[in-house]
Image (cartoon, rainbow, N blue to C red; front, side, top):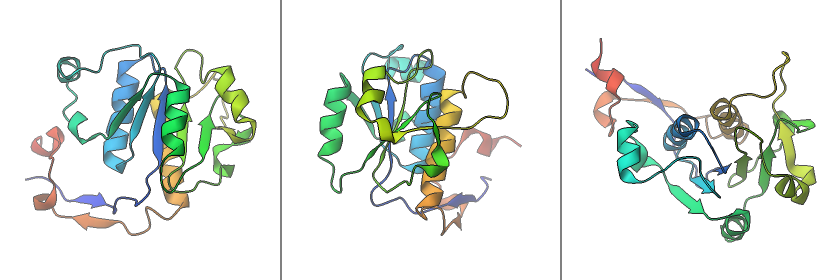
Length: 188
């Protein structure tokens, strides 16, 4: 029998998770699952390093793709125009290994776009230059180049949700209410 799940209500104005030219399908798959779990729309911007057609998604074993609010944009300008039209409009918050301020200082607001760059080279410099006061990083104690893209997205999305109170009223939802049981629900 499936286990009860800890749930929160969806945000009225959710955070927008934005990946600029992601290269590794497993990272994007993990972030898509994060977006499905938090009901945060996922925006894929620019050229992708993989395919996202139905056949490729099924082959990758991503059984929750239908739960993702997915938007694709050919380039940054297209995304920026779409984001500016949201009501209420959110701000753009960029997360980069080159950020000089901590993500904990980002001052999140509902509807903000949380932007992450490609695994090999991060957010394009022209985008960073457009928002110089909105670039944040995740501090590390060890001498690593950066944190994995999927891990960084999870850290930031849940901190953003926590900081605006979106996690305050967590409740236990019975297994009968679970509309999409996970495969591990059947393994004992």
